[in-house]
Amino acid sequence: MHCFISSMMNEHAPYILTDSKSLEEALNQRLSDKGRIFILADSNTSEHCLPMIQSMLPQDGKDCMLMDLAAGEDAKSLDTAMDLYRQLITYGADRSSVMINLGGGMVCDLGGFVASTYKRGMEFIHVPTTVLAQVDAAIGGKTGVNLGSLKNMVGNFTLPSATLIYPEFLNTLPKREVMAGFAEILKHALIADHSLWTKIIEAPYIDLPLIKSIIPEASHVKVGIVNRDFEEKGERKKLNFGHTIGHALESLILESPGKNLLHGEAVALGMIAESYLSMKAGKLSDDELKAISDFIAQHYKPIELDRMQFHRIIELMRHDKKNKRSKVNFTLLNGIGDSLIDQEPDMEDVMEALNYLEHYPFPA
Ligand SMILES: NC(=O)c1ccc[n+]([C@@H]2O[C@H](COP(=O)([O-])OP(=O)(O)OC[C@H]3O[C@@H](n4cnc5c(N)ncnc54)[C@H](O)[C@@H]3O)[C@@H](O)[C@H]2O)c1
Image 1 (cartoon, helix red, strand yellow):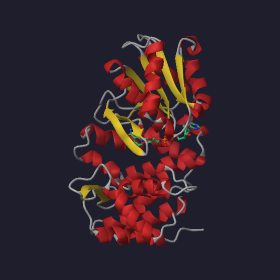
Image 2 (tube, rainbow, N blue to C red; image 1 turned 90 degrees about the horizontal axis):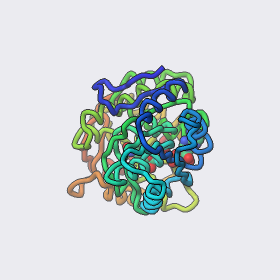
Image 3 (tube, rainbow, N blue to C red; image 1 turned 60 degrees about the vertical axis):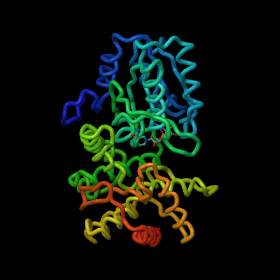
């Protein structure tokens, strides 16, 4: 079984494949008339997902070239990209070759970047294996690498020839990564899909079966938005809800030795603070703010902040690459299920929002 989730029938929309036979068919359809196949995987996806993909390829994938990376964000660099270009040259990749990016957002961003720039572009297919990549990173054509601590500083917009989503790959994903990716599902519901929000809050548990079952709806939100605004001139900025404060929290934690916070966890906390800003702007009711904050507090851990750090967070937000004319740019909610881009709240309100987040009663 597979379903094609674009309402606009964009040929690059992802396919959700609910059984291994459909994944095998989808792969082979796209690879049958191609040259050499290169598979990019990290140490975890090599262990947990690669054997299945190889078994689906002609001669169990013995003709494919595996490019194996260390897991983790550090590999998403120009140094790794150079190493991959060298491997592609050594093993004779040409423009009939295809690269399969088998992994989370790190592998998809890096692999998409390398494939889209090698010899001015070779074909690539994303096979995302994390929740975050299945609903977000593998959709919409953003590719890139980091420059040191500066995230996604070098990259481009290039669509893969296909994104093949197989939710069963999520079975081996650590629970913390599952919940970090779930934050992006929650964001998709809050910015654009009230019925998805209702489904989430009415579910008895937030567990992997529930998350796998809502991947189609959550991906659909992103597909719809990027089909209408591929180059992020307007509506695509809606996807930044929770990210202005979330990114600043992520950077703050990077400056604090011994602490760590996953991207999705930072976004979840950012969504509490940015929902508060939405309420202050008169766009979200007190009840909606409470419902969002309670839900996030129930499923994520709080962050300890002091007032000195509030100033540092605001400084970090001022460096965000989404800003224009020294104003800090936010996407805020216009009620649950709708959102407003290019909002520029006062910094006093941002301080209040951080204070709200800091004092929110998270259950012990
Ligand atoms: N291009 C975009 O539009 C976009 C959007 C959002 C995020 N991103 C990027 O995505 C990246 C984060 O993605 P991520 O959260 O998927 O992180 P990730 O790719 O680093 O994966 C998280 C961890 O899960 C492991 N893993 C992956 N699949 C697994 C599986 N099936 N079983 C067991 N372990 C598995 C990985 O090895 C890694 O240790 C960041 O670089 C971010 O900038 C890109």
